[in-house]
Image 1 (tube, protein in one colour):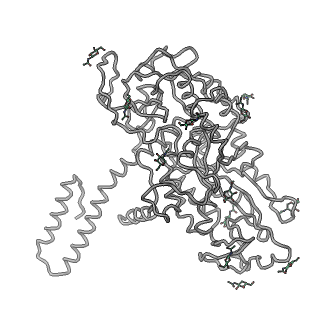
Image 2 (tube, helix red, strand yellow):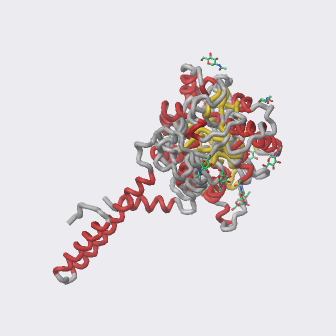
Image 3 (cartoon, protein in one colour):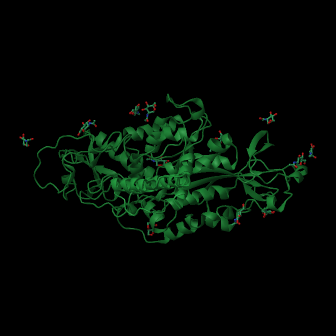
Length: 575
Ligand SMILES: *[C@@H]1O[C@H](CO)[C@@H](O)[C@H](O)[C@H]1NC(C)=O
Ligand SMILES: *[C@@H]1O[C@H](CO)[C@@H](O)[C@H](O)[C@H]1NC(C)=O
Ligand SMILES: *[C@@H]1O[C@H](CO)[C@@H](O)[C@H](O)[C@H]1NC(C)=O
Ligand SMILES: *[C@@H]1O[C@H](CO)[C@@H](O)[C@H](O)[C@H]1NC(C)=O
Ligand SMILES: *[C@@H]1O[C@H](CO)[C@@H](O)[C@H](O)[C@H]1NC(C)=O
Ligand SMILES: *[C@@H]1O[C@H](CO)[C@@H](O)[C@H](O)[C@H]1NC(C)=O
Ligand SMILES: *[C@@H]1O[C@H](CO)[C@@H](O)[C@H](O)[C@H]1NC(C)=O
Ligand SMILES: *[C@@H]1O[C@H](CO)[C@@H](O)[C@H](O)[C@H]1NC(C)=O
Ligand SMILES: *[C@@H]1O[C@H](CO)[C@@H](O)[C@H](O)[C@H]1NC(C)=O
Ligand SMILES: *[C@@H]1O[C@H](CO)[C@@H](O)[C@H](O)[C@H]1NC(C)=O
Ligand SMILES: *[C@@H]1O[C@H](CO)[C@@H](O)[C@H](O)[C@H]1NC(C)=O
Ligand SMILES: *[C@@H]1O[C@H](CO)[C@@H](O)[C@H](O)[C@H]1NC(C)=O
């Protein structure tokens, strides 16, 4: 009973060798960035991801082993996965391997070397989309709480494996077992994700629902494409995955080709139903991104971007690969970046060349640059402890107001934790256009005061940017008005440390009732230690008992166990 969790822990630890784990700080960043964006439609959010084909299967083979790293990727927050799906025109099944298996292939995990269309592929018979879905289901089950839920995007490229007329015979499966592998329709292939899939029907019913008259909902209703906000997607509809077919090489006129059915169209999105941009990184795109970041191009209104473009995916490739710098800037410009280069060479000394090839090493390097909101390295709590000035008027009753920084301000690099009592300019947002900001020119206020009513012009209120584009627009406003950074935004962790909320100094943390994971680990860990110690002691006692021992030996061990538990304040010693 005790050993089972131990084994589980050992397995997790093994699987994560070479993998970054989200530090408590990045966990806070991920969660706070998700929380502030809850009103934002999902097509506007910046995510990061990779092409499984280029970065995983082409390197490690199309085998079940190649998926070992998938759980770790999900755990660090990779949200977007691009995947090529192949329609085998002989077996009439969807498969992940780009080459057909010979009909007499053995049904085992041994990787098979296949030569097809001028390429060598290493493929395992058992690797199916169902297996990827199983990992995704495991991840979703493990994060199925308001605190941890996040949404994933599966981008599919559909391709066909065509056969010359006279050569297809050897690819006909010889055994029923072999023939039963894989699924023969797209909707069956993803069926195991069940109700986690956000389907075109869900979208239709969202679009038929009432439109909010105020706030972000009303603003984004001006868009030609109304998508659900993150909170509706995750917490109302309990959806987790959006599957989007972004390209198709299927030739539907051919008799052996796959025909997309109405059931498929009810389950997956095809490019015609969901306006999706997939750009490739290039110099022009990057320079217009820098313009948006520098705020030098205020006229090309930011609202044009957030209302007229959707799912702004951006891929790199062998010719134009991301550096940590371009990667970060593209995310801050509102793109969802997808890694698609076969090699990344980051100048980091302690990586030897073999580690440079591992996906874990790549994310380890890029993760700090993967967020649009916080500046790199933030939030660092309690570091910049500007000594408090002697404000005395109506200070809120916060127990530790002495030294720690608990309020968030905007710097050119992003959000930074600052001392709530420092007087800064503060950001007022137009209530009907989140890309329109006003910063009262001659007023500097402490965070607590900025929040008070009447500090913003009519039609504006003190709040925060909830989307990368809104942040860029705010920065551009500060630069254009020639005002100094930092500028207060409405975000703080006054009530519960590391739980960032907006709504003023008294806003409550929504997770207050929830035990945080690190607390949970703290709660579990000591009892684990005790359990292990007890097992060892019992074990030793057994050995000692078969050997002739002094009778008070036994008392001796019992005494040690008791002493250990007294020292660690545990009760209920098994005796
Ligand atoms: C499968 O059949 C091919 C000939 O069609 C033969 O060369 C190959 O050895 C066979 N493989 C197995 C595993 O039986
Ligand atoms: C494929 O593999 C075979 C045998 O290992 C080798 O002779 C051939 O050159 C390879 N072809 C390509 C395109 O890599
Ligand atoms: C298939 O037909 C082509 C020409 O149509 C021929 O060149 C080729 O050798 C044939 N292959 C087999 C396996 O019969
Ligand atoms: C899809 O194929 C797998 C076998 O690979 C099978 O177990 C599963 O039931 C199929 N799903 C559907 C919906 O047919
Ligand atoms: C906004 O919502 C209303 C009410 O559902 C709808 O009639 C209108 O077409 C929407 N506007 C846009 C631009 O989609
Ligand atoms: C797809 O449709 C075409 C024409 O409607 C038909 O000839 C073909 O057999 C269909 N393919 C499959 C796999 O059902
Ligand atoms: C934008 O700022 C970056 C550095 O912050 C600078 O390298 C770049 O030249 C600037 N671009 C423009 C168009 O001003
Ligand atoms: C608005 O966005 C569209 C689509 O990206 C673009 O073609 C157009 O030039 C933009 N207009 C302005 C004024 O920036
Ligand atoms: C990119 O990596 C280099 C070298 O490790 C580092 O000096 C630089 O600060 C990084 N830039 C960003 C934006 O993370
Ligand atoms: C991703 O990279 C692969 C390998 O370099 C390339 O064949 C493919 O076209 C790329 N995909 C996109 C969408 O650029
Ligand atoms: C501390 O905050 C002040 C403004 O309140 C800022 O000027 C300074 O750079 C910050 N120091 C550090 C180490 O972040
Ligand atoms: C308190 O504030 C006043 C006026 O702002 C200033 O003159 C005084 O030096 C401050 N006292 C301390 C201890 O900082």
